[in-house]
Image: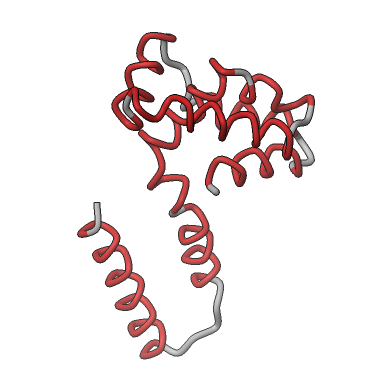
Length: 129
């Protein structure tokens, strides 16, 4: 699902090239590093399933701006990106929510309670690593 979300983010962005560049800054690895990461994440026994997933993604979300990620090499790069940076990507909506909470008009007591809740959420995320 995260793979589709990354692709959808690029496809829906006003500045598609900028959005792609943002994700690509995390993908700059050699092909050997990408293959090693994908292999460690999925193992050789899952290569057929990885190719099946790539084919399905290609059929369902293909667009010119993300065509590189839907090639076999590009898809390994995307899987490596998610495998090595998945928590950062998955928590970005939480980060946006926290930033938006800063703009709320709250009493000092409500702000303290909210900050305690936020700290607790981040602590729980850290424990789940």
